[in-house]
Structure formats: C-alpha cells, structure tokens
Length: 134
Image 1: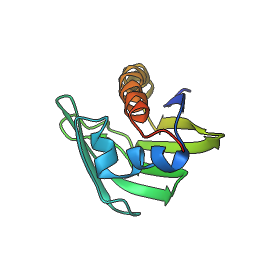
Image 2: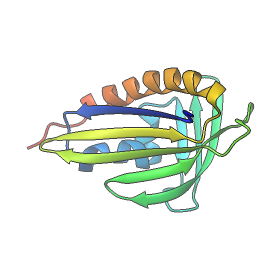
Image 3: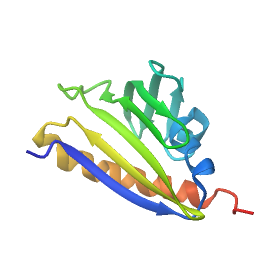
Image 4: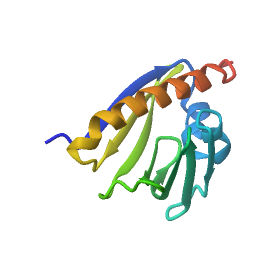
C-alpha cells in the first residue's frame, strides 16, 4: 500500500545554504506563500500554500541534514497522522534534497504528489537565488 509521496531534487548550492530554506521561517517564506516555524523539537509550524493553511509540530531536527514535522490541513484535516521530512545530503558543491510525506491515506497520495511537485519546484527556484559558492 502506497501511503507516501517521495520526491528528490539536486540543487546547485551547498547544504549549509539549502537547509535553512526548509528549517527556518524566513527560508520557508522564500518558497511557500507564508510560514512561521519554531525550529526546535516540539516547535510549531504554520504555513500557507495558496488558500490552504497547514499546522504541525517539529518531530526531529538535525541541522544541516534533516527536519521533519507533523502536517495537517487546518480547514480540511487529513484524518490520519502525516509527517513531512526533508533531508539534505552533500553532493560536492551541490545538495541532494529528498522530500517525503508519509502517513497519507491511499486516496490522498496523488493529490499530495501533485501538490509537492509544484512546491518543490518553487523550492528549487529559491535555491537558484542562493549565493554562489566561493
């Protein structure tokens, strides 16, 4: 049974610059419509993706490699515990980023796959705006 979305992207920026885009409020706001994040285990996540509001709590934080948080829609709850995780792995002067959204009901996977493809594209664009490595 498929209960997850898993997407990957390789970006031309070092991990130390990429990781804050997924693990700080300022970084998230560079590719989501709005966000607030208390970046500590147990800290609150709030985000806006178009007209949808997301709420969650940080589950794990291991800078500059991993952050994961619970994920639920404020107005239309998923009805199941779901978790979003970002992992950033050094690949020379580039970074390999994996996004996983797990715990989805089978009828939610395709919708979330499409959603994350769009937002991961915006994330990649935000990475392109990062400073060049020296």
